[in-house]
Length: 259
Image (cartoon, rainbow, N blue to C red; front, side, top):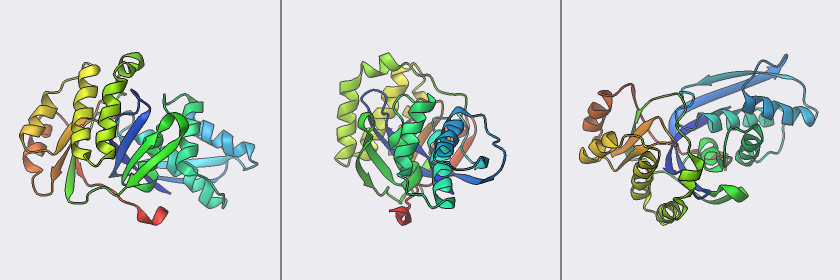
């Protein structure tokens, strides 16, 4: 089963309201009956959940294009792909993103459950969620006439939960902006604000915006940065990002067939 990575529209940590956009960075998960071969806390929690339902031990194979700990939604992509693959193999009726969020909290790998990331990873497009109550407020297709430029970095971004939550009102306003259709404005403000709050550089973001990006910022809590440009206008942003490290150029993903 496949799921996808993504970039942040609105980080859910400050206010519990989150929004994420899927990008074409694939995760493929396959399972077969056999000796369990995973140690990752989230995958163990998922397998334990299904084991309690009477399923046999499963061997898991994961192929991922997403750097681990990058802020590019790798945990949600792997989690939804694994849950979806188990549900497919054993013909189970499962709300894949919701179960991913619940088990992410149980495994202690997320402060909010990251329902927004799980929704976009599984369904594609752009998600709008209230993670505290596992509510999906809206899903919409992502614009397809854009290019997403990513400066890939791994190694887990900084999380200063109390500091982030002290900016709850600001991020509620950014979320409302996104919900009203001002996706690029919200994405831009979110990405800059998260970097500033966490004490991470914003010069790369500012340069991308000067070079014509519709939006740019830190994804998740970092350490990866991204920019969204109009199709055909990505060249100057790629040039800027390439001075800092490994760059991936990709597109958005909409998965209409999973409705």
